[in-house]
Every structure is written in C-alpha cells, then in structure tokens.
Length: 374
Length: 164
Image (cartoon, rainbow over the protein chains, first blue to last red):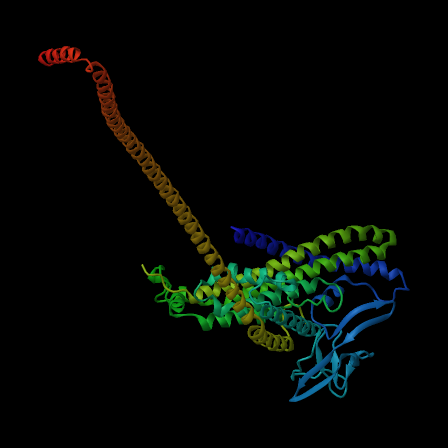
C-alpha cells in the first residue's frame, strides 16, 4: 500500500517535472529578449544577464567550479584538464583557458556554437582541426563532485561499519542509528520484498550502493555552494552508468526461466512468435527500455529540480533589470517558491533514490525468479 | 557539453568511481554492517525466546511450589486431625481406665473396710465375751459362795441350756 502511494506520487512528480522542464525550455528565449532589451539601455552592467545560459551552465558539466562572482571578479576552482589526442596525453589546469582566445597549447574551450563547453584541437593557424577527435578525460565539476561524494560515502559507511564492530549486538548510536533504518529499509522493503528471502543477499551491496549514492548526490545537489550544488544525478552520463550496471547485473544473473520468458513468452498466441518473432522482439526491446527509463527518469527529475530552482533565481534578476523595485518584489515570491521547491526536492531526492533502487531490485527479482510449480 | 549527450570522460570516471565505491563499500561497509545486523537480530530473537522460556519455567515453578505448599497444608491438616483423634481416644481411654481403677479401688476399699469391720467386730465380740466371762466369773465367784445359791444358779443354767 505504501509503495503504491509512493509510486503514484512519483508518477505525478515525474509528469509534473517534465511539464515544468518543457515550459522552462520555451520560457527561456522570451526572457532573453526581455533582458536583452532591458539591459541594453544600461551601459554599466557590461555583461548581459541571460537566464538560459545561467541555467544551462549550471545544469551541464563544466571544466571549472564556479563559486561566486563579485563585481567583475569571478571566483572559481580551476580543475585539471586531461586530454587524449592522437595518442598523446595532455594535462593542464583549466584556468589556462582564461585568455582572450580561450585557447592553450593548441586546444580551445569553445564558448559558443554546437560544441559550446567542449574542448577542440586547433591547427597552427588557429582554425579548428577537422576529423580527428579530442578525447576529454578531464576532472570536470561533476567528476570532482562524484569523487567528493564517493569519498564521503566511504568515510561515513566505513566508520559506521566500525561502529557496528565495536558496538557489537548493542543498540545503534549516533550516525549509526540515523543510517540503520535506511539500510534496513533497503534490505527489507526493497531487496527482500522484490527479490525474495533466498536470493536477496547477493544483490544487497549493489542496491545499497546505488541507493546511498543517488540519495547523497540528490541531497548534495540541493546545497547551493561548494562542495554541493553540482548536478551529479541530473547528469545523463551518471545515470547512464548506473542504469548500465543495473542492466548488466540483471542480464548476468538471469536464469533459464528468465530467458525462456524473454524468447518464448508463455501465454502468448503462437502467431505472435512465428513466423515473425514479434513477441521476442518486443521482449528484447523491453530489456533495453527498462534501464533506459531508469536513466531518463532520474536524470529528468533531478535536472528539472535544478532548472526550476535556478529559474526562480533568474526571475529576480530579469525583473531586477527592468526595475530594482520590481526585482525586490519578485524576490519575495521567488524565495518562497524556491524554499517550497527545495522542500519538494528533498522528497524527490529520496523518492528517486528509492524508485531507482526498487526498480533495479524488481528487475533482479524478475531475472532470478524460480518457475512456479503448478 | 550538452545536456543529453553523455560525455566520454564523465562516463569513464563515473564507471571507475562507481566500481571502486561498490568494491570498497561492499567489502568494508555493507558486508560487516549486514552481517552485524543479522547477528543482532538473531541474538535479540534468541534472547526473547530465552526470556519467554524462562518466564514459562518460572510460572511452572511457581505453580509446582503452590502445589507443594497446598499438599503440605493438606498433609498438616490430616496429621492434625489424626493427632486430635488420637488425643481424644487417649483421653477417653484414660478416663475409662481411671474410672475403672477408681471403682476398683473403691471396691477394694469397701472390701477391706468390711474386713476390718468384721475383724473389729470379731475383736469386739471376743473382748465382750472375755469381759463377760470375767464379769461372769466375778459374779459367779460372788454368787457361788453360798451353796444354796450355787444350786439355784446351776438350776437356772440348766434351764437356760435346755431352752437354748
């Protein structure tokens, strides 16, 4: 019953987020034109405020970690750039790109166009090299955030594990008692109920790891300044890797019964399987769509949350550019909405971690279920 | 870096970090935590079971104690009853015996009184006879000093003897 409610709630959030996402997409150009006109009359501002750019710069990955901008001084953490180009490895700090041409040692950080934010190779003349690709293994903002959260997770859980060892068979204390209900929740309500009493233990490390990785990063994304604020679980590469792990584990642990169900689905009329194997094709597509949906759901939910929060911030500046009083008035409303959104995101952060873990567990359960004896 | 195209570097780092995280947490965190949780659950379960069993035993013990006590009480009552009966019987017997003894003693006393009386009577008779003989002797001595009176007396005695 509880699960049903949370799934329904999640569906509501998911559809809601998607709508908000698309609205935001269409709203941005309007805002641009608005601010463009407004700021254009003011010469002192120098840079024009562009809500779309601001939001996208935050939501997507970046080669440096932007902290704050005071006047014209930007405070950023430069991150290492690691490039693999024509068999050679290039390592340098990203602050080397802080020059007029945004280029260094034959590479340029594109500032506009289709490759915006990517690093491309330049010829001696300064034109982009055609054909050969630069492989970018830089420690970007998201990568650094992953490192930080991984280190934090290891520190927290290894110390909790040590507490379990030293506090053997006693009531939990401190951090241990905060995390124990979550661990037991993942074990009893996710793993045991979806996979079954006999086989759940094998999947527990993975389920606990993805649950806490997603949950921690969701919460970290809500903190607006370093070391939080990176859009880790709202990055498609991150969710892709998580979903691929789920897919691989499902595929590897699939038993005979599972593959028979995929290839020769019982209870389906024979003409759906022969001569055109329609049903097997649908089933095999289904194998791929399951993790694909996992990937998109997490990515879209978290990204949408970030976009909405930033949208409210941008509103203050858009209206502030028209008139200071208007900006002040809007800021009250924006702050109220942002607090509301942040509270909602706390909930979404947990629900998304729960849903991702639950669905992974369900797929593992489907892959390992024993055939029923009739 | 676009929103919906995963970057190669990020994929690489994420996979690497996630695998490491999975390995490290799996070995140093999840395994001991899950193990300890299970161990604690079983120990709590066992402790509860033992407590239940102990309580059951206590109840049993208490019950048997009570039973024992009840039995003891019953036995005591029986003993007391018996003792009382014995006492009553003894008393009765004693009373009967005492009565018998008393009556026997009284009988004895009566008999001896009779005997004594008889003896005393005999004694008295003897004494009376003796004193009467003495008296008679004195009287006869005085009376028979005169031969006429002797005759008279002898005649009288003879008469008396005839009548007797």
